[in-house]
View 1 (cartoon, one colour):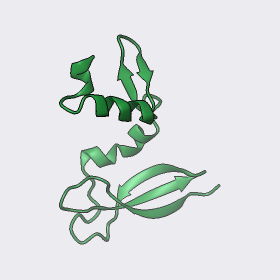
View 2 (view 1 turned 120 degrees about the vertical axis):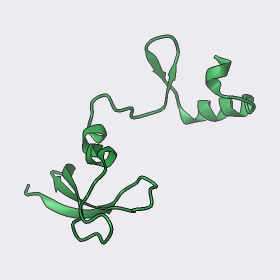
View 3 (view 1 turned 30 degrees about the horizontal axis):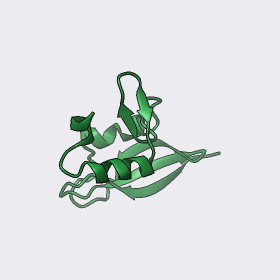
View 4 (view 1 turned 60 degrees about the vertical axis):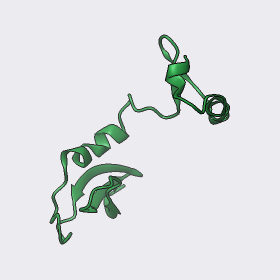
Length: 97
């Protein structure tokens, strides 16, 4: 499938509000670059955003909540997290473990 460029915006909360161009191939982003028509950044991307696709498709990316329980990390579910936060409103779960 040929690539198509899609417009997007940066998800980081900085004042530039960068505009992005993302090349999409087979439903996945294949190239990310700044939009050269953006009036402030004129195509510039910061180092954090320039590496976004590397992190997005990394095999090490966490896909669900996990908790350190010695080693390895253990998957936890939202209903469990909700109950635990309700039981420990005064501090973090890490302090309770």
